[in-house]
Amino acid sequence: MMPLTLMKTGESQTIKRIGGREDTRRFLENLGFVVGGTVTVVSELGGNVIVNVKDSRVAVSREMASKIMV
Image (tube, rainbow, N blue to C red; front, side):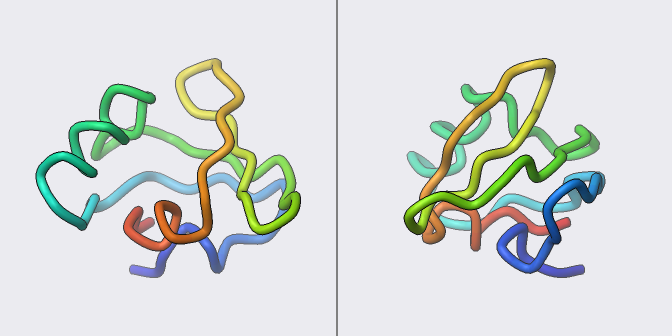
């Protein structure tokens, strides 16, 4: 298992665990980050990680991305 921040651009992985406080986990879940879901890194831009998750393109901060384990 590794944090989303270590994935390379274009790489797809299955989400294994979402860490952080309850409100953080709920926020990420509402964006489509759920355990068992697939996430693909599109690019990194100004400290944010841009990913495809559940057919949506989402930008999350590096801090948030570090709580998503793949």
